[in-house]
Image 1 (tube, rainbow, N blue to C red):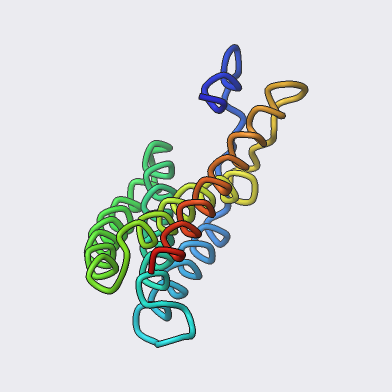
Image 2: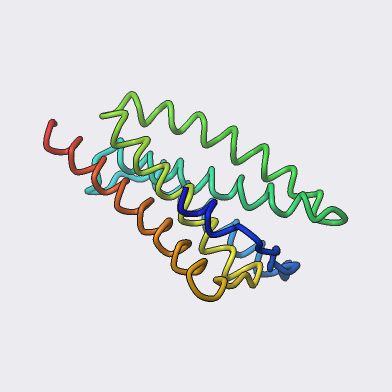
Length: 158
């Protein structure tokens, strides 16, 4: 709701990204997701797979934004399909390794936070001035706080 209020009377401010930046961003996210899937760490398995899921879904979301630009960016359909398909499979695995709330909470946080960061870094988006910018910051903080609360309540029940 906060985000939608911030968009009243606003105009899109994104710009076409640089190909190298996009390749680096998508590759680094997919690589980090692969490491989380393949290697064992001190993180609970459901949390690690939830994090990997979020990175994959975030790559899919970023790819979707690229596809809407048309032209050469239509090639991002390949990463869109691959990342959403892989992310769905990894999320199901996460559910099998622990609390669905933990896996889905972390996945949701990352799925939302990473594309927001990509908006600033890759697409040169900027916060709107005044109250609208404050509403967008509050919306982002709500996403992070909600995921943290979901994760902490699931951890206490385990």
